[in-house]
Length: 371
Ligand SMILES: Cc1ncc(COP(=O)(O)O)c(C=O)c1O
Image (tube, rainbow, N blue to C red; front, side, top):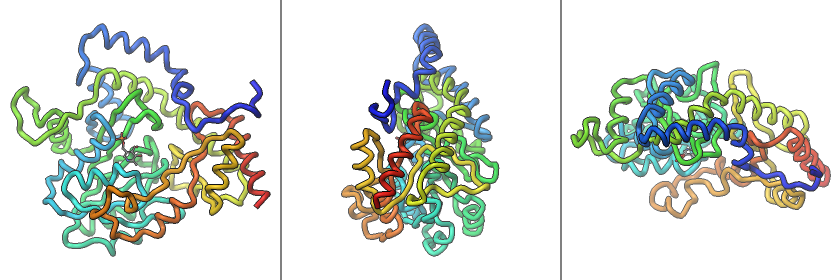
C-alpha cells in the first residue's frame, strides 16, 4: 500500500482490537457456554484485577462512565442543591452526573498549560454549600492532586476523580483514581482500556462506598427482591468484563505504544504548535494527544485535504451547550473557551502506526511553514 495516499483515521476500532480477536473469541465462547451473562465470575475477577492494577481496595463494575460518576456522587448522600466544584473544560458527562443528582456544578477554570483544573482557582469558588471537588484527568494527564488534596482537606470536601481518559496515568507515582474517595472510569471502546460496548467502574478504598455502589447498581438491592436504596440498573455484563480482562492484561503495552507515538510528535512537530506539557511529576497515558493553534480550523481542513483525520475535544464548552441553559450558562469561562477554540486532537490510537505519525507531523510542519 502506498502510505502517502492512504487515509490516516483518527481511530479505527477494528485495527486497535485486531491483535486481541483470538483471545476475545475464546473468552466469548466460554461465556456463551456458561449461560451466565450478568454479574458473574468475569465481573468479579475483573473487579479484583482492576483494583489491583490501580492500587485500590475495591472496584465495582458498572454500565458506563457516566453511571460511575453518578453513583459516586449518589453514594455521598449530599443534600440537594449542594455545590460541586468541577473543571469548566470537560466532557458533558462530568457535568451531567452532578445535575442528574440534583446538585449544582460550580465551574473552575483550567490551567492553560495542563488543561486540567487550576488548583489556584479552586478556593475562591468554595462556599458554605460546597461539598465535593470532582476533578477530571483530561486527555490522560493527572491533575495536580497534591495541591487539590490540601484544599479538600482544609475545607473538608470529598474528592471524586473522573478517570475516563486516564487509565493508569500517574501523578508522583500514584495512580489516577486513588487520590480521592472515589475514582470513576469509562471503558467506552475508544478509551485506553476500552470494552467492545459500554462499560464503566468505580474504585474506592471505602468498604461503605463499595457496598453502597454495589447496591445502587442493582436496583438498590443486594438480597434479591429486597430494595434498600433508590437504585438503578447499571450492571457490568459478563461479555464486556471478559473482554476487559483481556485488554487489561495488555494495557501497559497499549499505553507504551501511545507514549511512543506521543514521543514522535514531541520530537518532530514544529514549535508553531503548542504541545502538551511534559513534567517528571506526571506519567501521561495520552488518551488524547492535542496541540493548540489559533489556526486550528484551517489546520484541520488542511490535514483532511491530506487524508488525515483529526478530532476536536471539544468544540463547545459545557456552559455553552443548549442543554445547560439555566444550569451553568451564567458562569463565564474564557480559558475553557480559548482551549475549545484552539485545540486539535491528533491520531494516537493503538491501531495507529509510527509511520503514520511521521506523516502527520510532516504534513503539519508543511502547514506551519506556510503561516
Ligand atoms: C471525561 C469523561 N467523563 C465521562 C465520560 C463518560 O463515559 P461513558 O461514555 O462511558 O458514560 C467520558 C467518556 O466519554 C469522558 O471522556
